[in-house]
Length: 176
Image (cartoon, rainbow, N blue to C red; front, top):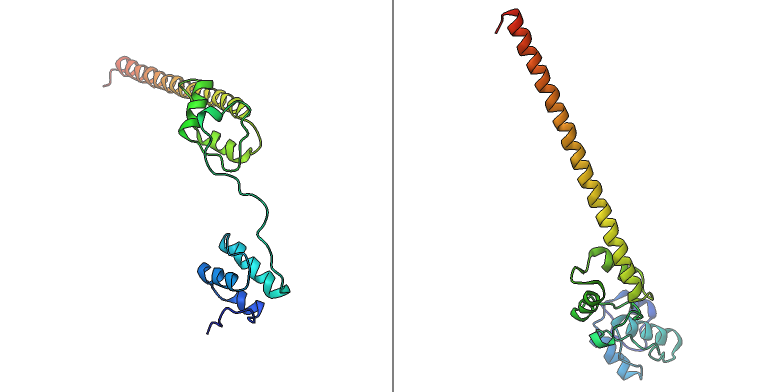
């Protein structure tokens, strides 16, 4: 049976049982601990309190705003953040800089995710490079298809020549 969540609970018992966030927040309020934050943060705060008897304050790291940048805030020097979103404003910015053929590709979205700290100018350079790679790949695919067609026509021609020779031999030998 689960023990009650009090300040006399052992750290082991506290960590071995599931607690609702509301229960954790109530404990915090009753014992003068900050009750805000994620469930993980609150759990760490209570664990620290049960171990040391001291109140662990909220982390002073400010949370990064998840609000998307508006179109007027965007420039070539805009820094790509961890919380980057491919919003309509961002799409409009890139269409203005690249042209109407701009699309958010999987490769570009991966670039945003893996290149936090780089700028939109870097993203535009990447987009052009990726576009060139696609064009080269398309040319190679078309060339391979054309070579296959040429090889197929060559094989077909050889078959026709063999059939014509066989027909001529039958005529010469008088067989059908």
